[in-house]
Amino acid sequence: MLPTPGVAWLVRQLGAAAGIAVSASHNPHLDNGIKLFEGTGYKWRTEDEERLEQELPGPAAGPPQDAAPPPPAVETDLAGLYLEALAASLPESRPLGGLRIALDCANGAAAPYAAPLFRRLGATVTVIGDAPNGRNINLGCGSTEPAGLAAATAAAGAALGIAFDGDADRAVFADETGSVRDGDAALYLWATQLHGEGRLDPPRIVATSMSNLGLERALEAAGIGVVRCDVGDRVVVETMRRDGALLGGEQSGHLIHLGLGTTGDGLLTALHLAAIVHRSGHGMAELLTPFRRYPQVLLNVPVARKPDLAALPTVAAAAAKVDETLGADGRLVLRYSGTEPLARVMIEGPEEALITSLAEELAAVIREEIGAAESVT
Image: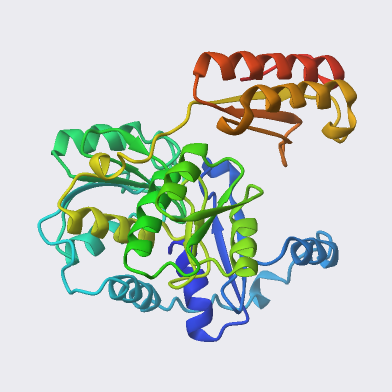
């Protein structure tokens, strides 16, 4: 068992042709799937995955049981190589000495490794979600349900809490007050630290359309630009490589530092954010004071079909009205879900009552045009 980013790292180190991670990722165990990596350590392109699916043969009888080859031997030292690389990404032997933290391993791939790694680097650790049984991955714990982490952080008097998802390619945080902090907060802290050290070249990051407008405003004030892209860690990485950006990520806690890896790595993100907090001598909440999160409303509208929203006159007119009302101090993101029959209406702005009203009006127009029987928020 190994975090997905560990597979991506090992592909390059071993000169392997490909890497395969089998995991439910941030989902329940019933949603188990696979993630594929090229020999370069980057995820396969969508078109390559589709081509593979087309070439796969249909169901067929396997070889007789007595002719089945023996399973390959497990190479037990590979996890150690990955963990050594993580530890070496920080400059000192015990860079977290004296830091008290809480960890939630989501009953997933980080469970055997996270607490020993942080203790080795000097931290005092409280850990939950570290008893995976194959069925409890992400169950009431981890980055998608961080309430347990927030409580554990407060109960332990920890300076920082960190929750991973099931395959440990994401991390979200709890600050010293027990408040949950997402990937936008982590991006702000990591970007400003790198920029302050003169190591964010060029001085911009990549974030998705769902990252909060407050992140863009706070980074702008710090002299850092934000390049927006569509949702999905693969799209984030593609945009980073195209624009030469060093750092990028998603609100979900999937952060990528291309100087240190090829994909999101929750353990790597956690180590570096913990080091930033520890070196500063201040709490995460205090460090995030310049980052004012704009109120955000997200409505999901079930739809019967998915025509181009911009080509629907009533929807386009309603969206234009929202843009005009918000002006430069707000943002509308209108898109379909990639996996569900839903239109997503996301609006950010300085006043929650206003953006809620605008979102409901736009959702009503979409519902009238192409809506299914019920709406879900």
